[in-house]
Length: 318
Image (tube, rainbow, N blue to C red; front, side, top):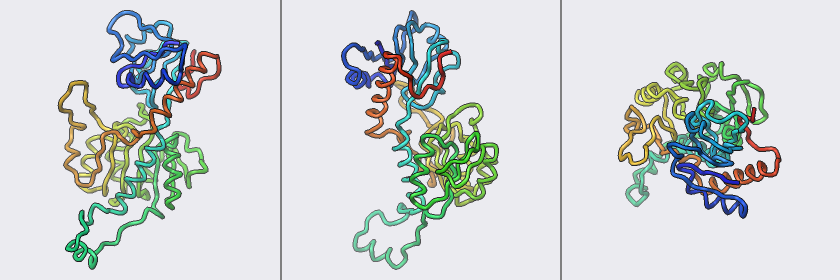
């Protein structure tokens, strides 16, 4: 069984090889060849163009080594070849969300950086009251792997959970559930809005100027979905003008290309905003991520080889 690991995933080839063992071949490539056949039983990649897909030979599985499928062109994978994805990032992302919420609520950044003799004498008589997460309402747009992990931790803090999904189906982890078509209704009561839904044409720009205007001026926003779920200009202006209290954004509108020395993450100067915690797409990037992901991928490859059902099939063979 020959697995081709492409681009940023190529360094994980030794890990996958060790997991699969003898009789398998995990091959790292910086990029797919510009011409000629692409020969592999399994393609491990987050990107595939129509032209590349047309040159796939012998492929029996496209295994996306992450959750998002937005880099796989529609129709690029030949008919009869399943597409699977993998999560395993929900634990660190949930921890990131809770950290940013608590950092906002506790506002420790407003206290003296050094509690020396002078700082202690100055701050103690006028130390400010800080907030509490307990009793606040967290609205999660998307209630899949990430949303549920966040909800479990937020409930432990005493927060009220609102789940916003396509169906609006009730969930035991949520205090209330509603369809995405009713998102704007719940925004005036939302203290923390967490975006953790997939990006597709129905969610692109889902939270824009009208949604941000419906939020409390004390509300806090966290985006760990894809940048484009949150309207770029509307988000910048709402934060700049303090129409919401703050945000933590981990996903961006532009990403550096190989060899690119400078790359602004947005058309707007988000980095100048004092009420924004901007992070470089690290919420899921934990020490445990790759071991969990590649153990899952190795098991899917073994299932393919032995004829057992694949896991996380997002497009069945047809």
